Every structure is written in C-alpha cells, then in structure tokens.
Amino acid sequence: MTQDADRNGLYPGNFPRSYWLEVPPIAGSQEPLPAKAGIVVIGSGLAGASAGYWLQKAGFESVVMVDYETEQAATFRNAGHILYGTVESMKALVEIHGEEKAREIWQFSIDICEQVGTTIHELDIAADYKQDGYLVVAIDETEDGECKESVELLNRMGYHSDYITPRRVKELGFKNCFGARYEKGSAQAHPTKFRNGLVRAFLKQGGAYFGGAKVTDVTEHGDGVRVTTERGTIECDAVVLATNAYTPLFAPFFEGLVDPFRGQVLTSKPLKHRFPVKYPHSFDHGYQYALVTEDNRLLLGGWRHHSTTREMGLYSIETNPHIEAGLKQFARDYYAINEEIEWEFSWSGIMAASRTSLPFIGNTSSPRVYSCLGYTGHGFSWAHGSAKLLADIMAGNPLPEVARYFNPKLAR
Ligand SMILES: Cc1cc2nc3c(=O)[nH]c(=O)nc-3n(C[C@H](O)[C@H](O)[C@H](O)COP(=O)(O)OP(=O)(O)OC[C@H]3O[C@@H](n4cnc5c(N)ncnc54)[C@H](O)[C@@H]3O)c2cc1C
Image (cartoon, rainbow, N blue to C red):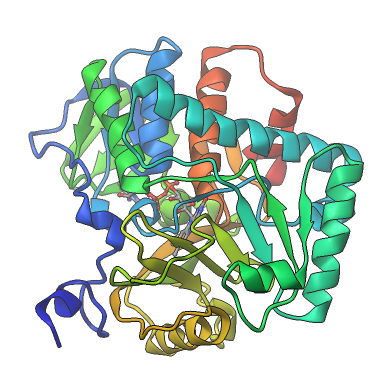
C-alpha cells in the first residue's frame, strides 16, 4: 500500500478523501459564536456558500454561516458535473408533471446552469469551468432507444440535443456501448474551487463563518429564532437550512421529505491515454458518471444500484469495497484504454433524495425558517440556483412562476 493510497482512503476503513479535497476547503472560524445575528445559514457547502453570497447580494446584512465536519459535505465529494435537467429525464418529467410543468422545470435548470457560469465569471473564480457538454451513453439497446426518444422529445420541445451513433461512440473512446445523447450546454467545474470562491466573496462582503458548530435544534419563538449548536446559541431573525441530506437529523419538518443516500467515486492516477471525451458523461441511465480531470485522471462514480440497499439511508462515508470493485470492472469493460489504470482516490459522499424529486426552496412550517435543499444528485447547479431563488423569496423580490413547484409547505 502506498502512502498516497492510504491517505486517500483507497482501502476500507480509512478516511475517504476526495480528489477535489486536494484543494483545501476554506474552513470556518473557531472563535466564539456571536450571541445574535440577522440570518444564520446552516451549512457551508455549495448551497450554504451560495445562500450567503446571494443573501448579501439581495441586501441582507449580518449573515452568519455555520457548519461542522466541513470536508464530509457532498460538495467536495461529487463528480463536478453541471447538468441541464433534474434526476428525471425529460420523458419522465413529462410523464410525471405534464409537458407544461416539465418545460418550466427544464428551462429553470438551464437558467441555473448558466448562472453558475455567470457567477464564476463575475467573481473571477479560477474553478476550471468549462461549458463543453454532456454525453449520455447507452450500454444496451433499450437505453439506446431511450436516447433517441429523448433527443426527439427535447428537440420537439425546442431544446437542442443530438443523437450520436454507435460508430461515433466507439470513435469517442468507449467500447461495448450503443448510441448516445449529447447536450452541448452542460458544463463542469472544480467544486471546491467554486465553493471557496463563493466563501471568499461572502467573507469579503462582511459575512461571518464559524466551523465546528453542529446545530442540534432550531426553534422559532415570539420574535426570532434560536439556533442551538454544540458551541453555543445564536438568536437571529431568520434561518436558512442549507444542510441537504443532513436536515432531518435536526429539523423534523424534513423527515420523510428528504432521505440520505451514498454515492461513491474512484479517481485514477494521471493517465497517458488521450481521452477524446473529457467532459461529463454518464452510462446506464446515469447510474455511472464520469469525467476526465484537468490532469488527465479518469474520475468515475456510481454503481450503487448494484448494492442490495442501493446505499439508501446511510450517513457513514465509509467506502463500499463491492462498489469500488464494480467501478473498476466498469472502467475495464467500457473504456478503450490500452493502459493499466492505477486508482489513487476512492471516496463516498451523502446526497439527499427528495420525495418530490425536486428541491425544497422557501419557507417551512415556521415563518422564519427557510430551506434550500433536496437536490437528488444534481446539486451543483441546483444548490447555487436554489439559493438565489431563496434569497429573492426572502427579500420579497419578484419570483419566476416555477418557484411554486419547490414550495416546501406544499410538499407536506
Ligand atoms: C458521489 C457524489 C457524486 C455527485 N455528483 C454530482 C455531480 O456530478 N453533479 C451534481 O450536480 N451533483 C452531484 N452530487 C450532488 C451534489 O454534490 C450535492 O447535491 C451538493 O453538493 C449539495 O450541496 P449542499 O451544500 O446542499 O450539501 P452538502 O455539500 O452535503 O453540505 C451540507 C452542509 O451542511 C452542514 N451541516 C450538516 N448538518 C449540520 C448540522 N447539524 N449543523 C451544522 N452544519 C451542518 C455540513 O457541515 C455541510 O456544510 C454528487 C454527490 C455525491 C455524494
């Protein structure tokens, strides 16, 4: 076992460190917590950091962000995909919601993907952002048919998407695959660099960020909210829950609305192989997802549907050796790489499955307690965009019609 493999958790029982954590996340202050604040944002991942940023832009002052065990957040453990859509395909969205609602949700998903690019540009964040598209690769005939149907449906609805033939898929460096669907608007970025850029902007504008402050209770009373943490109590005017999968652990309103599930990722050492597709891609209905990092590593995640529990209901970020082995085999089976792949990083992270398959953005049962969470695996753009929408809700700004679909109170 090499020292690197040990440190990066390639073997079970070790702290599973992700490739993205090679860039250290900015950590919160260990100073005593303030007794009072305007707004307390709980969580410092993509959602919390975005909420802090957008709340300040909306004119709120005295915004305090708290977190604990920063590096365990899914934000630093994902695949860096910034994708159009939701966890459901457009076909499924239309079947579930009807065409009009599906269109509204899809358009919103495009807008928030674009928003990530705009924020990166405006804040001049060096986050390795590239808007180079997304390839959905079919690994059997049924999925190939679904790719064709999706392309047809998306184009009929006015969204551009291309069908890629099996022959071209082979030329693109895959083997044992069928056709694919390509979407050019999707993007990728380094999640830690993006999140750190948001935190920096938040701190520069006077925001305060405290680490190690595990919240155990949030209670609204006469004229405010009491946030109880293991490091003390903060009295504030309002609270934002940006704690995604972890929310039901201290906010009973979200019990049954969001459930944790664990995703797992492997990342190789830099390879000599020249990958024709370096941008986000997925296989098998999105159950495997991948990209090629800036330093030419294959980053491959998924395989949880081969686990008997589907990794549902878990909060432990220990890696599952069965999934790790499955991912390694998957790489051998579906990538035409004439080189032995040496794996350097293996990690997992906890996502939130939303009961409605849409995020919960807005006011909860308590008028001063707000949420932006429940991204069901699509949190990169959704966390940033949801936080912007939430800041507009809290500021009383005009809202897009689509906001009504994310109202947490209507989900109960
Ligand atoms: C393996 C994997 C692959 C993924 N791939 C992608 C992808 O390619 N594209 C994509 O869009 N999404 C992906 N996701 C999902 C995405 O990473 C998440 O949806 C997103 O990071 C959620 O951000 P968040 O800030 O809401 O939550 P998190 O990043 O989980 O952050 C939660 C925050 O809450 C804080 N917290 C929790 N409980 C408490 C408490 N009691 N007190 C104080 N603080 C608390 C934590 O400290 C943390 O700061 C993936 C996730 C995983 C795990």
